[in-house]
Every structure is written in structure tokens, then in C-alpha cells.
Amino acid sequence: MPPFPDMIVWDNFFWFTSYILVFTALSAFGAHRIKVLYHFWKHRKDVPVPQREFAELPVVTVQLPIFNELHVVENLLRTVSALDYPRDRLQIQVLDDSTDETAPHAAKLSADLKAQGYDIEYRHRTNRNGFKAGALDEGMATAKGDFICIFDADFQPQSDYLKQVIHHFTDEKVGMVQARWGHLNKNFSLLTKLQALFLDGHLVLEQTARSRHGEFLNFNGTAGIWRRAAIETGGGWQHDTLTEDLDLSYRAQLKGWKFIYLKDVVVPAELPPDMDGFKSQQHRWTKGSIQVCKKILLNVWRSDIPLRLKIEATSHLTSNFAYLLTLCTLVLMYPANFVMGSSWHKAVFVDVPVFFFASLSVIIFYMTAQGAQQRGGWLKTLPYVPMLLALGIGMSINNGKAVLEALLNQSSEFVRTPKYGMESKAQASKQRSRYKAGKSIALWIEVLLTGYFGWMIGLAAQRGQWGSIPFLLLFLFGFGYVAAGSLMKRFSMAAFQAPQPVAVEA
Image (cartoon, rainbow, N blue to C red; front, side, top):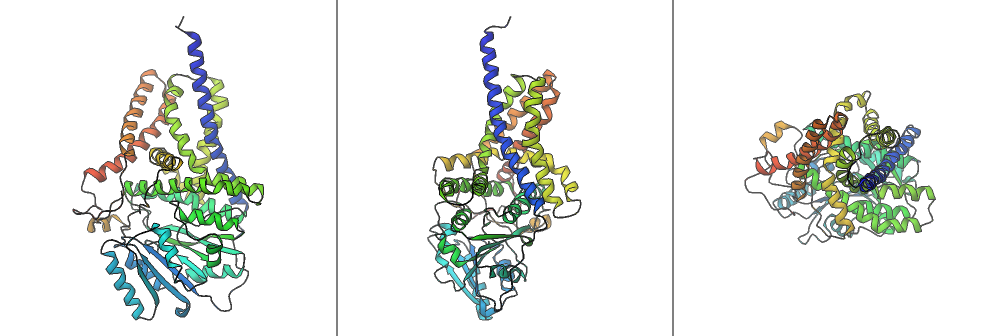
């Protein structure tokens, strides 16, 4: 008879209850993806069309916020100056916070365009107050247009972009129109392919479903046009969060402005080609979304919008709390596999529902996003699905840390994602960049977890629990891949690292 049998029973009960609670919560996020899929397919043919066209095109101000963008600023100004729009109705603002030679280079490029007859204004700040939000806000003082178009430094709009978008504003209720991001360097590496799959879930499915079903959506920070009045009545650009775009989006929509998403208008941009850049970007987006959630969610529920919109907004603003649940699964992996054991009750009432809502829904979600873009796209995605799930797990430390920082009101600077202006390995081999992403202690936790899950796989094999091994392998590969990506950047002469890097905020 085993010692302390009552203690063993209660121990199993504790772990089993924790397991059910955590995975039930994760399943709720998975169930929301199913809801998004349903609305996407329901409205897939409801393509937004303008009420009419402007008899006379309105004045548009194109704002270009940049910070140390030496490799991409020339392409940015080239593509923006090539926009097919009357010059007397197009103002370009270069909002430059650069602290390196980007500043004189951008100033010269702007002066050259001005000499060619473009209405272009170059503004250089040295204080960086409010970071990107501060630059956009200060630019509004001299913006001439009733419509404000924003492009980040790595975006390359097609020449007909403005004419495809601007006529949607003939509806006086429309406050913002957002185009979809494309991916210039999707095929650069495995990492960029996986990033594209992740982003397309949001850009192809979520934004389309929310827009066409009449729910709140968010400006993605770039490749969109705002009605100036929507910015102003929404309270303007504020910099008390790291995602000023999400913040203003909710404030404007709570004032009654309508947002439109154009899935079929695509503006290509660069994906972070290295792991540290990806982690830095994800940390900022995740932390900023939780900051906005804390700031806005109560106002959403106090507003007089319909209940269904409040529920969807809550799902949207709280979605990144899923990373905290993923952190909980790290604690539960050992007891779930080696303490609770297996039974048909656990398999039928827990494991199967969890797999369907928390795992299968995710797989279907991302495969559908690719299938919606090209025939057979879902089939091409299939080989990447395990790696996609693993990368999501591997990012849980980085992003979970961001959630906790936001909850604990830990302030941090707006850390830019370095842009390299490289779309292929051939370009990378010829060009080195001085820009580096921020670093984090999360790396060493990822290294430890790689070893931990390697040990658990060995233990499962020793005990003959072969059914646990595929699931544990996802965790091993996820943390191993994320950690290896950062380690390779730090301890080798990476293609993007110059001997004397320019300092960027850590």
C-alpha cells in the first residue's frame, strides 16, 4: 500500500483541476478562432465598395515616421513620391527622429523631391518625446490634408494605392480605411515564412471578419488612411501605451466612427529576418495590447454599443493573455504526463476537447488564411503547421514577460524593429547592417526550458509513454528554435551585424 494515499489522491485532484482550468481557458481562445472563421466565410463575398467617387480628389497628407532607417528610407520616398495622385493635393511629411546618418540622408532626399515640385516637409526631432505617437502628433500641426495616410519605413505602396482607398471616405461615417500588409521577404528563411503565416491569420481572417461583420477592428499602425476628424475627435495620438494605433482605433470607434478593411489592397513590407528582431517586435505589440486593454476595456463596457460588440472587443483586447496560460502549461507538463497518468475519462472529457478547441482550431485557422489567398494555399501550409505551433510555444516566455510587464505597470521605451532592406539571402551576403534589436533575459529561460523538455522526452521514452512524446517535441523544438535563433545572432558573425553597431534602445 502506497504511503499517504489521501495525499496522493488530493495531489492528483489538484493537478487535474489545474489542468482542466488552464486548458478550458485556452480552448475558449480557440473557440473564438472558430467564430472568426465562421464570420469570414459568411462575409467572404461582401467586398467593401465606395458609396461613390469624389468629384474632386481631397488633399491627402502622407506621414512617414522614421527612426534610424538608413537601409530603407530611399525606397520609402521613391515609392511614396510615385503615388498616382495630383501633386497639388498631396503633401508628404517626413517625421524623422533619427540619431544616425539617416537624418542627413533623408533631409537630402526630401530636398531633392522638393526641388522636383513635390509638397514635402522634412521634420527632424532630437527629443523623441512620445516616440512614434509623438512624431505623428507633432506632424498634425502642419498637416494640410483632411485625410492622413501613414506608412512605416519599410512599406512600399503601389502607385494606385491612394485612388483605391480614398473614395471609401465618400461615406461621411468612415473614419479609417486599412489595407492589408504583404510580405516582401516571406521566402527569406524559415522564420520569415512562419511569421507570414502568423500575421496572415490576423490580416486575412480576423481583420476581414471584424470589418465585414460590423465589429471593432484596429488600425495596424501603417498602410492606412485616417479622416483627420476621426483622429481629433478620438483624442489624438497618445503615447501612454506602446501600441498607439490600437489605442486610437478604439477611442475613435467608441465615438461612432466606422472602420473599413480592404483585404485585397496589399502593401508589401519587410518581416524581421532575425530572431531578436522578431522577439522585440512581438514584445512591443503584446505589451502594448495589454496596456490598451487596461486603459480602454472599462470604457468599452460603459459605452452604449451593442452587447455583441462589447464581447468581441473583450476577446480582441484580452487575446494576448493566452500567453500567460501557455506559461501555466509549462508548469503542468510534468504532472500531466507523469503524475496524473492516463485514463479514458481524461482522454474523452479533457484531452479530445482540448485538442479540438486549443490545437485543431489553430491549425484550421492558419491553413484557411493561406487557402483564402491562393488556390491550394492550405496544402502548401501543411508541412509548416508543426513548426508554426512550436514557434508559438517558443515565444511564450518573451510574450508572457511582456504581458506581466504591462500588468505590473513596468514602463519601457518604444524599441523599433530594425529594417534591413533585404529580400533574399543573396542581398544579405552582400550587405551588413549596423542595426541590432534589443536583448532580453528571456533567452536564458528558453535555453533552460529546451533542456527541461529534452529531459522529459527521455523520461517518457524510459517509461514507455510514447503518446506523450510528439506533444513534448513541440515544446522542445519551440524553445530550442527560439533560443538558437538568438544565440546564433549573439555568438557568431551574423550577416546583419557590423563591427561597430550604432546603439539602439535596449
